[in-house]
Structures are given as C-alpha cells and as structure tokens.
Image (cartoon, rainbow, N blue to C red):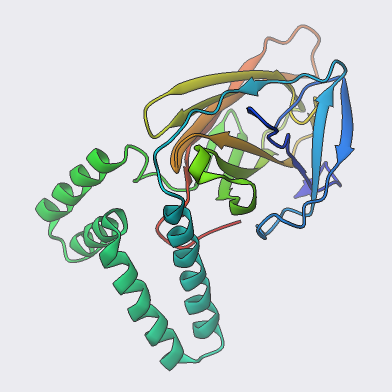
Length: 285
C-alpha cells in the first residue's frame, strides 16, 4: 500500500519549565528541530521536531503531581530490556540463555503485582480455568483501570482503518515530578473506493486517576492530508500524562473530496494503553 507521507517525524512539543504540551499542532506552524539523542530508541521514530504556531502557543495540558516513585520507571525499563534480550536469545537459538532470562522475567513478574496477575490470568485462560481468570481480571481492573488494554489498537470505519501503537519515552519523563511521556505512531489507511481528507482530530486522554481531557485540533501534525483509495498516511506524535499509565482514544473528522458538499463523518480511534510496562507481550515501537 502506498504511503502519502515521505517524512518520518515525531511531532513533539517538548515540555518546558512549569508545564508540558500535547504534541500535535494545527496550522500555521513554525518547525523547530531539536536534539533527540537523549530519547530512548523506539523503532519507527527517525527524526524529532517541536512545532509551535505563529504566536508561540499550542494546545496545552497541565501536569499534576504524582506520588509514584521514580524506581517504578526504572523497574519497568528493566522488564522491557529482559523481554527484548529473551527474544534476541531465542532468535539466535541460544536456548540456554533464553531459558535463563525467562526465569529472570518470571521472578521479576512475581515481584510486580500487576505483572503477576496478568500472567496468572493468561495461564488460567490457557488451562480453561475461567473462574480463576475472571477473578484475576477483576483484581487487575481494581488495581489499574488501564491494565487490560494493549499498547496498540486497530479500528475501521467506512473503509478507513486507524492503527496506533504507543511507547514510553523514559528520556523525556520525570516520574519524581509526576511527568510520564509517551510517543505514539498512527497509520491511517483508506481501504475504501473514494478519496478522503482529514479535517480535524479529537483525542480523549485519561490518566490512571480517572482524570479525562479532550483535545481538539485542525488536521494532524499541521496538515489536512488527502488520501486516495488504497493509500495511507502515517505520523508520530507524543503525549505527557501525570501517572505511569493511562489510555487514549478519539476520532478523526473526514470528508469525501470527490463530491462537492459531501457531509463530514467521524472515523474512530480505538482505545489503547499508555503504559510503562508495555502491553504484557513485551511489544514496543
């Protein structure tokens, strides 16, 4: 499938003193390149940009204080590294090392209540112990309202599919100050037989405390791209929240451009998790 964008950007508005900004911006924009070598390496993110509109302002969000210790971020990073190392060992057929790392992961999960419950639920489902699985599921929901969500989602509306994957950016986060930074990549594919244009975006961001914020904007990353049938548009962006996990969802407002006066319609963005611990399968972008 052809992609309509040739640039691989992370559209980041990096947080400054006293606050943080939601990443996406509408027109007009002034693009300022920033040094991104301190970011952790999420695959698919090639270049980083900070964008501001003409008066230096953009869509802004407040960051609340959180009591979550910074050690939680460190443990989460360790867990992600262990997952990656086990995968590499298995691919290189070093099964002894893979088994050793697997045991380390099991020990790590036993010490993390959320991870332990998630593993117990998967085991119960695999062994068809559905009563136990339901109990673990309920405990997970009580512990964290976003703990059962994946860090990716895929939804299709009127032939337009939206795929999203998120990743925690440790290098831009300050857990001791209640700031957790997440990047996400969006792929919008026009699988219909009519050309469409993205007019507006709407994000619903919810942190682990249940605080919900709605963010609206024109187009995406300062553009209102037109997608012909069987083409796609991809972009990367980012979002800070005040807790170690949360969720995002929303919709894109679009119009068909092959007929003057066509009414607009909304394309759903299915919920996905923002989580330091990934989605339970060790997946990152």
